[in-house]
Length: 130
Image (cartoon, rainbow, N blue to C red; front, side, top):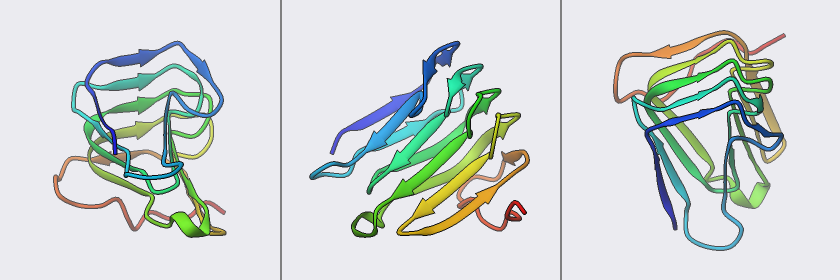
């Protein structure tokens, strides 16, 4: 699959499906790495959408002040391999959820600010929104 590395700033754009939209529609696993210098900020819509078997690894950077969720992870039953791994960086002050997760009919959404400064850990354990 294709591989992308984001190091710069994505700002003041409009895209309801996400400023970065990763999707696997038929082969190979698309991967995206968000580096510490990356900023996905002040956009109208989602920050990042990770869909159908794709992988996004956030090693740092900032996802902030977007009008939609910071990160939306979604996939059909047959595409359960979708992953978002947060090793560093921050997801703050977005319009809806910080991280929204719906895969194979299972839904979990987290509100609040996410800041990870310890490399090597997957983002887990945050309280679900009520």
